[in-house]
Length: 470
Image (cartoon, rainbow, N blue to C red; front, side, top):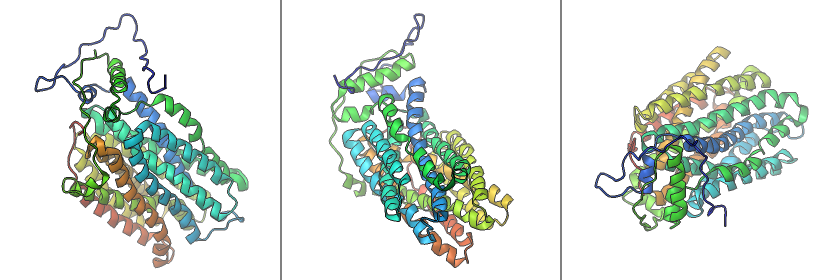
């Protein structure tokens, strides 16, 4: 018996605990519920929490890695063995995003064919190994190659994790749960900032290498994730694996004390080709979501991957720059929590648009910041609003496509965003030269990109509280 075929064990609730009757046994038309309707009716329970935390830890490792590279590049540039110039630094930053663009496109495609859980754990292994390889790199070519492979794993994991969590979340709380998943990004980025502040400056020439070795921990976590994560019920049904799908639904029902009911037989729907993203049915949605992803990525990665280096140049101290970046990173958490609270009250489209508009204002104000107080205040506002928008964007994207296209469509949107993540760090040296080394031009451009993302978000469909399409 394989691990996939093994029945899911539901922990005992105690002899006195009695399962509550189901809230409803049939749909509005009197027909039996589908498995997905049975999942949608559940309250948030310990099984959802376990899935959220297991996926979120993987998400935090991703963020830690992306955050670490911004600190590592600043440290490598100061390492006499490498002595990187601004163009070389921008390539070390951007090569990872090239890998992320390719990984996002392939990861979503693989997830629709091999399963969300399988691809998630595979990506953990890929970027864990590659982080270790980068830590022992002795040439620029080795650094670039390892960073590219890291990007492949990172790019594939993020849309797959958000799709998996979205597909298990109750309809009434799906947006909030997905934003909370994205909030683990803040945890990872804060850890990266702490490593940058405490580890890199205090461990000599090997400081940045120790930081990257810490980034290899996902290799161990992949073993845990493989056991903790369930496979998507929608994916299992699409593959005709009804027995596994039923066991997975019953596990989540048992966690809420809901008595299982008989589901109507799942109909295996025809596959949707990826090219249908550009057909008449999905073209408008695809253009809107791709534009939103592109401009959000452009501003975020252009700003935050260069921030430690820019602040080091502004204040003349790498350690002081890392401390300011750590403080700015802490503001991500309240941004996520506010977005998680608003996303089910205001809806996806309004919440996303407001957070992007505030991000545009904060980026413009940051461009004018001349002292430490202004850098911290406007940087923290930018961090909170931008990352709150990220959370809502990850909630929106899986909702607007059907199951048969969801992984590939989410991956394609993320891949479009990664193209912007490649371009932005490469353009920053040019922006700096236009301003005589000052950050002002760069952050005005990022503010404009946030405005464009806000406009694109207004054209997205509103799916708050709706059941996901099959």
